[in-house]
Each structure stands twice: as C-alpha cells, then as structure tokens.
Amino acid sequence: MNAQIYNTRLAFLLALSDLKTPLNEEEKETLANIAQQLDIQPLAWKDYTEPMLLKMIQSNPQLSEQYNQYKTKLETLPETSQILSGIDQEIQALILRDDPMRAKGFKPSSKPTEYDSQINNLVVVVSRSQEPENAVKTVSCLDKLKQTLGNLGQ
Image (cartoon, rainbow, N blue to C red; front, side, top):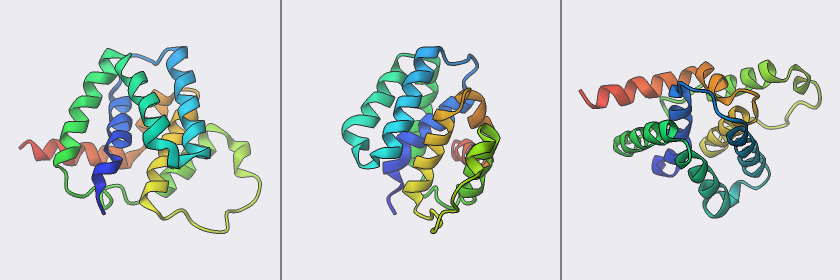
C-alpha cells in the first residue's frame, strides 16, 4: 500500500492535535463542510475536498506551520497502517462521545476495514465535532504516529 496518498489527511489531524488556540467559527464551519463532502463523496477528495482543506490550513498560520512539518515527516515514513491499527474502535468512541444518540439505529452490516475508509472516517468524525481541536487529542493512534515520527529524526 502506498501510504503517501493519506499524508494530507494524517498531517492535518496531527497538526490539529497540536493546535494551541481554538479554531474560529469560520474554520469550524469549513471543517464541517469538508466532513460532509468527504462523507458523501470520498472520490472527490483530490478535485474538491483536499483543496478546500488546504485553503483552510493555509489561512491559519499555526496550523499551517504544524501541517507542513508533519507532512514532511510523513513523507519519510514508509508505512503507517501498522501504527494506526485500532483506529476503528477510536472512531466509534468519538462518535458516541460527541453524539450519544447516533449509537441508536441500524447496526452496520459490514466492518470498515479499508485503510482509506478509516482515515476518512476519522477526519469526518473529528471535523464534525463541536471542538475538532479537542476531539482529535483523544485519538491515541495519532499519539503513536507522533512518537514514531519523533523517533525518525533521532
């Protein structure tokens, strides 16, 4: 698997988890739009959703700086799927924590096992939360990825 295609999403999540100041309302609205688009039309990532995310990142200097640092580090990392194992359980925990009513309803007939779906789901759930910069800090697999990236420079 070529992990390079996920670097934008992963670098965004990592940068968001390091953000010291809260996102403003416009940025939160943009993230909600990105989540909506990624959820209903994941194949439009390259043409529509990614440019919208990159524009939002570039408009926030602190987020942009962290994003660029993580993006550079991720490009040197050969494989991230092992580090991000268990992401499905963390997504479910975020969904339940953010909206307990969402747990009610039909049980999915299949388990999301594709790496792309898991990364997209994480971006969607974090971006839809009321405080994305705090929601992303609860995802422990991102901490593992940060630790691995930190060890690369040593």
